[in-house]
Length: 156
Length: 120
View (cartoon, rainbow over the protein chains, first blue to last red):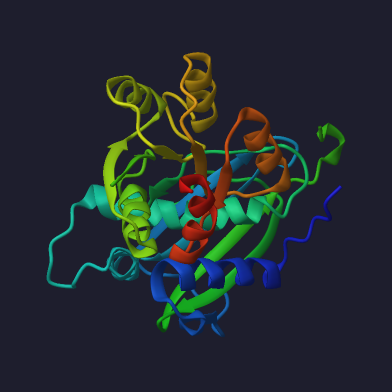
């Protein structure tokens, strides 16, 4: 059985790898943030749920302005080129999907990953918050939070 | 010219996969599908040289697409491009007849590494 190790270090490592490969080409642009607990203004949240023996969720929260910048960087779209809102939602959701999929890979069992969702706030979530990673991408706040229950009895 | 069918419910991710394929080299003729149902229709219309599919999609998942293809006699080389690359999923993919599984995030080098043997 795989050991369950979802902590700040593992989440940060995944996020850094995802951002470096998909967005920046450089691991140094996503870093830990000092002002832990500070609210993010005008938030945009993207999350994916995990169903199965370890039901859970991975969520990315940043400001809408930062999410737009992030998506433009991901798609290599210049700042002055208009983008469809559907593409912004799609792209931001995909970043959460990739981070969430890699977080799920840390867990044992045969759970399934849901489709990504994007909104201005999270729906009610599980009690078992495992880790919040307060990060900064290009100097702007970006939080990654992971929840999962530890009911290993149902593992296949 | 290598005819590839890129299947993903995210239009953005399809664009990223296509961009990465071009960065990986080769001369690609690309078609796109938003889920397994659309992909099956595209394959019936004209069988590609290789199918690159997301796993988790509405309507028909990548695994259902692969199973349907094989059930309908299509032995087209098939690879998953998915956000999760756990050992269990790799085993499942291989057992169903997929030739490879590329976990997101990916690089052009990663694509080249798994696709090269398929095209040889």
